[in-house]
Image (tube, rainbow, N blue to C red; front, top):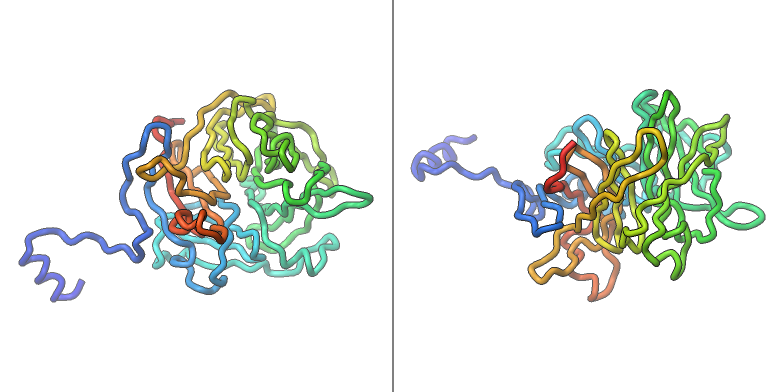
Length: 332
């Protein structure tokens, strides 16, 4: 603090507030309406990392680990890491580029696409990123998972052994769950019943597909059916912590929190929490795409870029951002 600032502080006899870098950054918790998440803090991703990754940051997945948020975008091959305090001065803020070309026959085209979500295997300190869907012969589509070591050196990639009918309604969320010494990837379907079109938008058919590594394959071993009462039109991301599972919906602008059985691939009815709305009860978080547990009652969510059009104008203040939320009433 400079001498001039010290003198001003002494003259006013009032403590100065800590200045935020940008107006979108919220340093204190806001009052939440019943049934809504409570905003703790948020900021634009570009305000944290500058223009190094470009100005179009279509955030699609986030992972909390060791005091940082690791973010993927579906239009970038790079990963973004920011400090969890969401400060542009945080030393952790960086853009991560994979250190080598991918193995397992991945093409140059594959190497330049973005990702829908990411997961972490804590036992081996490996990371996994998810590509939504790619064509397979003779017809249909499958999602692809890319694996990296602790330094983000690519180790290879493989398709998930599950057929998808729609390229635009593939796998959107990815999580790693360890059971009895065996690791499993949980892949969340974007559409209800893993379908596109009208059926995919009809609530009540949320599905998470379970995969286990078998050689170089990711074999499909089970399916988690989300509650039929869940009113979500789509599903964007999934995160698991200490037996509790969170599933995010972009179209419904809401988060479902439930419990995952320790022995079976089953969940309870859980609770739906809406993302904060404006004074008229209208959606303002129109592009939430990724979620990760931070603690027993906090989650981090990232938002995609708002679409063009006057109807999406009220979403722009929250797009391409990182948001930290408290889940009222939640505990371990």
